[in-house]
Image 1 (cartoon, each protein chain N blue to C red):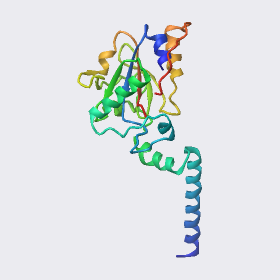
Image 2: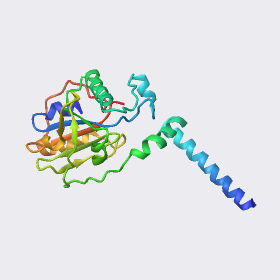
Image 3: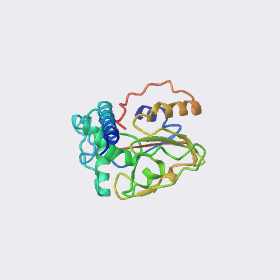
Image 4: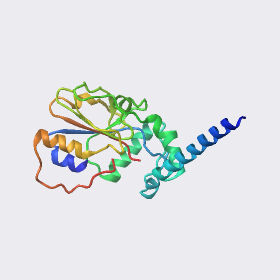
Length: 133
Length: 88
């Protein structure tokens, strides 16, 4: 997603919305989380969620603009976001693209295809590595 | 219990074991099957938003942990790509 951001940030806005953890240590932790040292319990307070979000941004050097869902999970519920999902909202505030439910139907290339259709392909290469989600 | 019901129960339990074994194979382990059923399925929703519908407005918190903003404040001049996810 970072590559797509770097390619199209001059033409579209981007916002990452941080929702409830997908694989916290106190719920369904995956082996890959342990291997990659991404071990966090499900936040019980907003401060905890903010801390993990900041950890992510710093460890992954994540450059995209960021927003964090409140503990009532309003954004998650409104957008059926958990565990991960992509949307494009047009200039009129309407859904222009609604991605599938992650992880299996989460596909950043669908967003790129939408951006290519709207703005055309980008020919320059991007050197920034993509984040996990 | 009559013989018929014993057979029925036995077949049902056998199918459950086969289903669990299959899910364990797909998910990676029995622990992952439990995790998926216990923690993932209740939160997974197909999604009801469709292209053309108004994007819901929600209040979000900035990374500094103190300033709030609304998602729709970021729309208007250009398309907005929204990426939902978490670190784990």
